[in-house]
Figure (cartoon, rainbow, N blue to C red):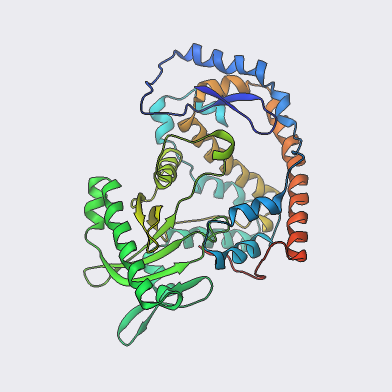
Length: 392
Protein backbone atom coordinates (compact mmCIF):
# COMPACT_ATOMS: atom_id res chain seq x y z
CA UNK A 1 0.00 0.00 0.00
CA UNK A 2 1.27 3.46 -0.87
CA UNK A 3 -0.20 6.92 -0.51
CA UNK A 4 -1.36 9.03 -3.42
CA UNK A 5 -2.05 12.73 -3.72
CA UNK A 6 -5.73 13.71 -3.59
CA UNK A 7 -6.23 16.39 -6.26
CA UNK A 8 -9.10 17.98 -4.31
CA UNK A 9 -6.94 19.44 -1.60
CA UNK A 10 -3.39 18.20 -1.94
CA UNK A 11 -3.72 15.77 0.98
CA UNK A 12 -2.16 12.33 0.87
CA UNK A 13 -4.49 9.41 1.44
CA UNK A 14 -4.20 5.62 1.22
CA UNK A 15 -4.28 4.32 -2.32
CA UNK A 16 -3.31 1.29 -4.38
CA UNK A 17 0.31 0.57 -5.12
CA UNK A 18 1.24 1.45 -8.68
CA UNK A 19 2.73 -1.86 -9.69
CA UNK A 20 5.74 -1.72 -11.95
CA UNK A 21 7.68 -4.54 -13.52
CA UNK A 22 10.80 -3.74 -11.54
CA UNK A 23 9.02 -3.57 -8.17
CA UNK A 24 8.71 -6.51 -5.82
CA UNK A 25 5.48 -7.18 -3.99
CA UNK A 26 5.71 -5.99 -0.40
CA UNK A 27 4.31 -8.49 2.09
CA UNK A 28 3.50 -6.65 5.31
CA UNK A 29 1.61 -8.08 8.27
CA UNK A 30 -2.05 -7.16 8.72
CA UNK A 31 -1.06 -5.11 11.78
CA UNK A 32 1.53 -3.12 9.82
CA UNK A 33 -0.94 -2.46 7.00
CA UNK A 34 -3.56 -1.27 9.49
CA UNK A 35 -0.99 0.99 11.12
CA UNK A 36 -0.22 2.59 7.78
CA UNK A 37 -3.87 3.35 7.29
CA UNK A 38 -4.18 4.96 10.72
CA UNK A 39 -0.98 6.95 10.19
CA UNK A 40 -2.46 8.41 7.01
CA UNK A 41 -5.06 10.23 9.12
CA UNK A 42 -2.33 12.61 10.24
CA UNK A 43 -1.74 13.75 6.66
CA UNK A 44 -5.40 13.57 5.67
CA UNK A 45 -7.82 13.82 8.63
CA UNK A 46 -11.18 12.22 7.95
CA UNK A 47 -12.93 15.57 8.23
CA UNK A 48 -10.70 17.03 5.51
CA UNK A 49 -12.46 14.88 2.93
CA UNK A 50 -15.47 17.23 3.17
CA UNK A 51 -13.62 20.22 1.75
CA UNK A 52 -13.62 21.33 -1.87
CA UNK A 53 -12.31 24.53 -3.36
CA UNK A 54 -12.31 24.81 -7.17
CA UNK A 55 -9.12 26.06 -8.75
CA UNK A 56 -9.14 29.65 -9.98
CA UNK A 57 -8.35 28.44 -13.48
CA UNK A 58 -11.27 25.97 -13.60
CA UNK A 59 -12.67 26.14 -17.12
CA UNK A 60 -15.13 23.35 -18.08
CA UNK A 61 -15.59 24.57 -21.66
CA UNK A 62 -11.84 24.94 -22.14
CA UNK A 63 -11.25 21.43 -20.80
CA UNK A 64 -13.77 20.04 -23.30
CA UNK A 65 -12.14 21.98 -26.12
CA UNK A 66 -8.79 20.43 -25.24
CA UNK A 67 -10.29 16.94 -25.21
CA UNK A 68 -11.82 17.55 -28.63
CA UNK A 69 -8.45 17.91 -30.37
CA UNK A 70 -7.84 14.18 -30.93
CA UNK A 71 -11.27 12.51 -31.42
CA UNK A 72 -13.13 12.22 -34.73
CA UNK A 73 -14.02 15.91 -35.43
CA UNK A 74 -17.51 15.39 -36.84
CA UNK A 75 -18.61 13.44 -33.75
CA UNK A 76 -17.49 15.97 -31.14
CA UNK A 77 -20.74 18.03 -31.43
CA UNK A 78 -22.70 14.81 -30.84
CA UNK A 79 -20.81 14.26 -27.59
CA UNK A 80 -21.47 17.83 -26.49
CA UNK A 81 -25.15 17.45 -27.37
CA UNK A 82 -25.43 14.44 -25.08
CA UNK A 83 -23.71 16.31 -22.28
CA UNK A 84 -26.39 18.99 -22.47
CA UNK A 85 -29.10 16.50 -21.50
CA UNK A 86 -28.42 16.57 -17.74
CA UNK A 87 -26.08 17.77 -14.98
CA UNK A 88 -26.08 14.90 -13.09
CA UNK A 89 -18.38 -0.60 2.55
CA UNK A 90 -15.00 -1.01 2.37
CA UNK A 91 -14.69 -2.38 6.04
CA UNK A 92 -16.40 -5.85 5.62
CA UNK A 93 -13.91 -6.77 2.92
CA UNK A 94 -10.99 -6.01 5.25
CA UNK A 95 -12.12 -8.84 7.53
CA UNK A 96 -12.36 -11.37 4.71
CA UNK A 97 -9.64 -13.54 3.26
CA UNK A 98 -7.93 -12.50 0.05
CA UNK A 99 -9.62 -15.23 -1.99
CA UNK A 100 -13.03 -14.41 -0.52
CA UNK A 101 -12.64 -10.81 -1.68
CA UNK A 102 -11.57 -12.01 -5.11
CA UNK A 103 -14.63 -14.22 -5.55
CA UNK A 104 -17.13 -11.74 -4.07
CA UNK A 105 -19.94 -10.53 -6.30
CA UNK A 106 -23.10 -8.45 -6.02
CA UNK A 107 -26.36 -10.43 -5.91
CA UNK A 108 -29.08 -8.44 -7.67
CA UNK A 109 -31.91 -10.82 -6.78
CA UNK A 110 -31.71 -10.22 -3.02
CA UNK A 111 -32.09 -6.40 -3.20
CA UNK A 112 -34.94 -6.85 -5.68
CA UNK A 113 -36.84 -8.87 -3.08
CA UNK A 114 -36.18 -6.13 -0.49
CA UNK A 115 -37.96 -3.45 -2.48
CA UNK A 116 -40.79 -5.66 -3.70
CA UNK A 117 -42.91 -4.98 -0.63
CA UNK A 118 -42.32 -1.22 -0.91
CA UNK A 119 -43.10 -0.79 -4.59
CA UNK A 120 -46.43 -0.84 -6.31
CA UNK A 121 -46.92 -4.00 -8.33
CA UNK A 122 -46.73 -2.06 -11.59
CA UNK A 123 -43.38 -0.48 -10.70
CA UNK A 124 -41.88 -3.75 -9.49
CA UNK A 125 -42.93 -5.57 -12.65
CA UNK A 126 -41.25 -2.84 -14.68
CA UNK A 127 -38.02 -3.36 -12.70
CA UNK A 128 -38.21 -7.13 -13.19
CA UNK A 129 -38.75 -6.59 -16.90
CA UNK A 130 -35.59 -4.48 -17.09
CA UNK A 131 -33.57 -7.21 -15.33
CA UNK A 132 -34.95 -9.88 -17.64
CA UNK A 133 -34.12 -7.70 -20.63
CA UNK A 134 -30.50 -7.41 -19.45
CA UNK A 135 -30.23 -11.21 -19.26
CA UNK A 136 -31.24 -11.46 -22.92
CA UNK A 137 -29.04 -8.61 -24.15
CA UNK A 138 -26.63 -10.42 -26.45
CA UNK A 139 -25.45 -10.62 -30.05
CA UNK A 140 -28.56 -12.51 -31.16
CA UNK A 141 -30.78 -9.66 -30.00
CA UNK A 142 -28.41 -7.09 -31.45
CA UNK A 143 -28.61 -8.88 -34.80
CA UNK A 144 -32.30 -8.10 -35.22
CA UNK A 145 -31.87 -4.55 -33.95
CA UNK A 146 -28.74 -3.49 -35.79
CA UNK A 147 -28.93 -5.37 -39.08
CA UNK A 148 -31.24 -5.93 -42.01
CA UNK A 149 -31.27 -8.41 -44.88
CA UNK A 150 -30.70 -6.84 -48.28
CA UNK A 151 -30.56 -9.03 -51.37
CA UNK A 152 -30.06 -12.14 -49.29
CA UNK A 153 -27.09 -10.61 -47.44
CA UNK A 154 -27.23 -9.36 -43.87
CA UNK A 155 -25.99 -5.80 -43.50
CA UNK A 156 -25.56 -3.39 -40.61
CA UNK A 157 -28.26 -0.74 -40.74
CA UNK A 158 -27.56 2.93 -41.40
CA UNK A 159 -28.85 5.23 -38.66
CA UNK A 160 -26.75 8.43 -38.73
CA UNK A 161 -25.09 9.70 -36.69
CA UNK A 162 -25.36 6.80 -34.21
CA UNK A 163 -24.60 3.92 -36.60
CA UNK A 164 -23.07 4.41 -40.03
CA UNK A 165 -21.54 1.65 -42.20
CA UNK A 166 -18.02 2.64 -43.14
CA UNK A 167 -18.89 2.61 -46.85
CA UNK A 168 -21.16 5.61 -46.22
CA UNK A 169 -18.48 7.56 -44.34
CA UNK A 170 -15.35 6.89 -46.34
CA UNK A 171 -14.35 6.37 -49.93
CA UNK A 172 -14.02 2.82 -51.26
CA UNK A 173 -10.25 2.90 -50.79
CA UNK A 174 -10.53 4.19 -47.20
CA UNK A 175 -13.28 1.70 -46.37
CA UNK A 176 -11.09 -1.18 -47.53
CA UNK A 177 -8.21 0.20 -45.44
CA UNK A 178 -10.43 0.41 -42.33
CA UNK A 179 -11.67 -3.13 -42.93
CA UNK A 180 -8.03 -4.23 -43.04
CA UNK A 181 -7.32 -2.30 -39.85
CA UNK A 182 -10.24 -3.93 -38.01
CA UNK A 183 -9.12 -7.36 -39.19
CA UNK A 184 -5.64 -6.58 -37.85
CA UNK A 185 -7.15 -5.42 -34.53
CA UNK A 186 -9.05 -8.68 -34.09
CA UNK A 187 -6.16 -10.89 -35.14
CA UNK A 188 -3.75 -9.11 -32.82
CA UNK A 189 -6.26 -8.91 -29.97
CA UNK A 190 -6.70 -12.69 -29.95
CA UNK A 191 -3.19 -13.06 -28.53
CA UNK A 192 -4.22 -11.22 -25.36
CA UNK A 193 -7.06 -13.64 -24.52
CA UNK A 194 -6.97 -16.78 -22.42
CA UNK A 195 -6.31 -19.84 -24.55
CA UNK A 196 -9.87 -21.22 -24.22
CA UNK A 197 -11.42 -17.87 -25.14
CA UNK A 198 -9.01 -17.47 -28.03
CA UNK A 199 -10.07 -20.90 -29.26
CA UNK A 200 -13.73 -19.87 -29.04
CA UNK A 201 -13.19 -16.61 -30.92
CA UNK A 202 -11.34 -18.42 -33.68
CA UNK A 203 -14.54 -20.31 -34.48
CA UNK A 204 -16.06 -17.05 -35.75
CA UNK A 205 -15.42 -15.54 -39.16
CA UNK A 206 -15.25 -11.81 -39.78
CA UNK A 207 -17.90 -10.75 -42.28
CA UNK A 208 -17.32 -7.66 -44.40
CA UNK A 209 -19.62 -5.74 -42.09
CA UNK A 210 -18.05 -2.88 -40.15
CA UNK A 211 -19.77 0.31 -39.00
CA UNK A 212 -18.91 3.33 -36.92
CA UNK A 213 -21.05 3.52 -33.79
CA UNK A 214 -21.46 6.42 -31.42
CA UNK A 215 -21.36 5.10 -27.87
CA UNK A 216 -22.01 6.49 -24.40
CA UNK A 217 -21.08 10.09 -23.64
CA UNK A 218 -17.41 10.12 -22.67
CA UNK A 219 -16.47 7.91 -25.63
CA UNK A 220 -18.26 9.98 -28.27
CA UNK A 221 -15.74 11.30 -30.79
CA UNK A 222 -13.25 8.49 -30.33
CA UNK A 223 -12.93 5.76 -32.95
CA UNK A 224 -15.44 3.04 -32.16
CA UNK A 225 -16.28 0.30 -34.64
CA UNK A 226 -18.79 -2.51 -34.45
CA UNK A 227 -17.99 -5.72 -36.28
CA UNK A 228 -20.32 -8.54 -37.26
CA UNK A 229 -18.85 -12.04 -37.08
CA UNK A 230 -20.47 -15.41 -37.70
CA UNK A 231 -19.99 -19.06 -36.75
CA UNK A 232 -21.41 -22.12 -38.52
CA UNK A 233 -23.09 -19.85 -41.04
CA UNK A 234 -25.78 -18.78 -38.60
CA UNK A 235 -24.58 -17.81 -35.10
CA UNK A 236 -23.81 -14.07 -34.85
CA UNK A 237 -21.25 -12.29 -32.70
CA UNK A 238 -21.04 -8.52 -32.49
CA UNK A 239 -17.71 -7.17 -31.29
CA UNK A 240 -16.82 -3.59 -30.59
CA UNK A 241 -13.35 -2.16 -31.12
CA UNK A 242 -12.92 1.09 -29.20
CA UNK A 243 -10.00 3.48 -29.32
CA UNK A 244 -8.31 3.78 -25.93
CA UNK A 245 -6.88 7.17 -25.06
CA UNK A 246 -4.79 8.27 -22.06
CA UNK A 247 -6.59 8.57 -18.74
CA UNK A 248 -7.76 12.07 -17.85
CA UNK A 249 -5.95 11.54 -14.53
CA UNK A 250 -2.58 11.05 -16.21
CA UNK A 251 -1.97 14.81 -16.37
CA UNK A 252 -2.32 15.05 -12.59
CA UNK A 253 -1.05 11.68 -11.36
CA UNK A 254 1.66 10.92 -13.88
CA UNK A 255 1.94 8.03 -16.30
CA UNK A 256 1.04 4.53 -15.24
CA UNK A 257 2.73 1.20 -15.80
CA UNK A 258 1.12 0.44 -19.16
CA UNK A 259 2.61 1.53 -22.46
CA UNK A 260 -0.63 0.59 -24.24
CA UNK A 261 -3.80 2.45 -23.25
CA UNK A 262 -5.94 -0.48 -24.37
CA UNK A 263 -4.08 -2.77 -21.98
CA UNK A 264 -4.60 -0.21 -19.21
CA UNK A 265 -8.36 -0.24 -19.74
CA UNK A 266 -8.55 -4.03 -19.94
CA UNK A 267 -6.34 -4.54 -16.88
CA UNK A 268 -8.48 -2.12 -14.89
CA UNK A 269 -11.69 -3.89 -15.85
CA UNK A 270 -10.26 -7.32 -15.05
CA UNK A 271 -9.06 -6.08 -11.68
CA UNK A 272 -12.25 -4.37 -10.59
CA UNK A 273 -15.07 -6.36 -12.18
CA UNK A 274 -16.43 -9.58 -10.73
CA UNK A 275 -17.00 -10.91 -14.23
CA UNK A 276 -15.49 -9.23 -17.29
CA UNK A 277 -16.43 -9.87 -20.89
CA UNK A 278 -14.81 -13.12 -22.06
CA UNK A 279 -13.59 -11.46 -25.26
CA UNK A 280 -12.10 -8.40 -23.56
CA UNK A 281 -8.72 -7.82 -25.19
CA UNK A 282 -6.38 -5.08 -26.37
CA UNK A 283 -3.92 -4.21 -29.10
CA UNK A 284 -2.18 -1.44 -31.04
CA UNK A 285 -2.38 -1.19 -34.82
CA UNK A 286 -1.64 1.49 -37.43
CA UNK A 287 -4.62 3.13 -39.09
CA UNK A 288 -5.12 4.13 -42.73
CA UNK A 289 -3.36 7.39 -41.82
CA UNK A 290 -0.28 5.34 -40.70
CA UNK A 291 -0.71 6.50 -37.10
CA UNK A 292 -0.52 3.81 -34.41
CA UNK A 293 -3.55 3.75 -32.13
CA UNK A 294 -4.46 1.69 -29.08
CA UNK A 295 -7.72 -0.27 -29.02
CA UNK A 296 -9.60 -2.57 -26.72
CA UNK A 297 -12.19 -5.06 -27.90
CA UNK A 298 -15.27 -6.47 -26.20
CA UNK A 299 -18.72 -7.78 -27.03
CA UNK A 300 -21.24 -5.15 -28.07
CA UNK A 301 -24.01 -6.65 -25.92
CA UNK A 302 -23.09 -8.43 -22.69
CA UNK A 303 -25.90 -8.29 -20.10
CA UNK A 304 -25.58 -4.58 -19.37
CA UNK A 305 -28.13 -3.29 -16.89
CA UNK A 306 -28.85 -0.05 -15.04
CA UNK A 307 -31.87 1.54 -13.40
CA UNK A 308 -33.19 4.98 -14.48
CA UNK A 309 -32.32 6.81 -11.26
CA UNK A 310 -34.47 9.81 -12.17
CA UNK A 311 -37.57 7.59 -11.80
CA UNK A 312 -36.67 6.03 -8.45
CA UNK A 313 -38.55 6.48 -5.20
CA UNK A 314 -36.65 6.87 -1.92
CA UNK A 315 -36.53 3.19 -0.98
CA UNK A 316 -35.44 2.14 -4.46
CA UNK A 317 -32.72 4.78 -4.55
CA UNK A 318 -31.41 3.58 -1.18
CA UNK A 319 -31.13 -0.02 -2.37
CA UNK A 320 -29.54 1.06 -5.66
CA UNK A 321 -27.01 3.25 -3.84
CA UNK A 322 -26.10 0.31 -1.61
CA UNK A 323 -25.53 -1.91 -4.66
CA UNK A 324 -23.30 0.75 -6.20
CA UNK A 325 -21.44 1.10 -2.91
CA UNK A 326 -20.86 -2.64 -2.65
CA UNK A 327 -19.57 -2.76 -6.21
CA UNK A 328 -17.22 0.18 -5.60
CA UNK A 329 -16.04 -1.28 -2.29
CA UNK A 330 -15.19 -4.56 -3.98
CA UNK A 331 -13.21 -2.72 -6.65
CA UNK A 332 -11.21 -0.85 -4.01
CA UNK A 333 -10.69 -4.03 -1.98
CA UNK A 334 -9.22 -5.82 -5.00
CA UNK A 335 -7.13 -2.96 -6.40
CA UNK A 336 -5.94 -1.34 -3.16
CA UNK A 337 -4.93 -2.37 0.34
CA UNK A 338 -8.30 -3.16 1.93
CA UNK A 339 -6.81 -3.48 5.42
CA UNK A 340 -5.07 -0.08 5.36
CA UNK A 341 -8.13 1.55 3.83
CA UNK A 342 -10.42 0.11 6.51
CA UNK A 343 -8.02 1.28 9.23
CA UNK A 344 -7.96 4.76 7.75
CA UNK A 345 -11.76 4.94 7.64
CA UNK A 346 -12.20 3.57 11.15
CA UNK A 347 -15.52 2.61 12.73
CA UNK A 348 -17.08 6.05 13.18
CA UNK A 349 -19.30 7.94 10.75
CA UNK A 350 -16.88 10.85 10.36
CA UNK A 351 -15.71 9.81 6.90
CA UNK A 352 -19.29 9.11 5.78
CA UNK A 353 -20.42 12.54 6.91
CA UNK A 354 -17.41 14.24 5.30
CA UNK A 355 -18.06 12.55 1.96
CA UNK A 356 -21.75 13.46 2.16
CA UNK A 357 -20.76 17.11 2.70
CA UNK A 358 -18.29 16.91 -0.18
CA UNK A 359 -20.93 15.35 -2.44
CA UNK A 360 -23.34 18.22 -1.78
CA UNK A 361 -20.64 20.83 -2.39
CA UNK A 362 -19.45 19.17 -5.57
CA UNK A 363 -23.02 18.74 -6.84
CA UNK A 364 -23.37 22.51 -6.62
CA UNK A 365 -20.07 22.89 -8.47
CA UNK A 366 -21.32 20.48 -11.12
CA UNK A 367 -24.38 22.67 -11.66
CA UNK A 368 -22.13 25.70 -12.09
CA UNK A 369 -19.91 23.83 -14.56
CA UNK A 370 -22.99 22.70 -16.46
CA UNK A 371 -24.29 26.28 -16.64
CA UNK A 372 -20.88 27.40 -17.92
CA UNK A 373 -20.95 24.66 -20.54
CA UNK A 374 -24.46 25.62 -21.69
CA UNK A 375 -23.39 29.25 -21.93
CA UNK A 376 -20.40 28.27 -24.07
CA UNK A 377 -22.69 26.34 -26.40
CA UNK A 378 -25.12 29.27 -26.61
CA UNK A 379 -22.29 31.69 -27.38
CA UNK A 380 -20.93 29.41 -30.09
CA UNK A 381 -17.66 28.73 -28.29
CA UNK A 382 -18.57 25.02 -28.16
CA UNK A 383 -20.43 23.26 -30.95
CA UNK A 384 -23.17 20.80 -29.95
CA UNK A 385 -25.76 18.79 -31.84
CA UNK A 386 -29.12 19.12 -30.04
CA UNK A 387 -31.19 16.06 -29.36
CA UNK A 388 -28.35 13.58 -29.86
CA UNK A 389 -29.38 10.12 -28.77
CA UNK A 390 -27.35 8.07 -26.38
CA UNK A 391 -25.80 4.86 -27.62
CA UNK A 392 -25.09 1.44 -26.14
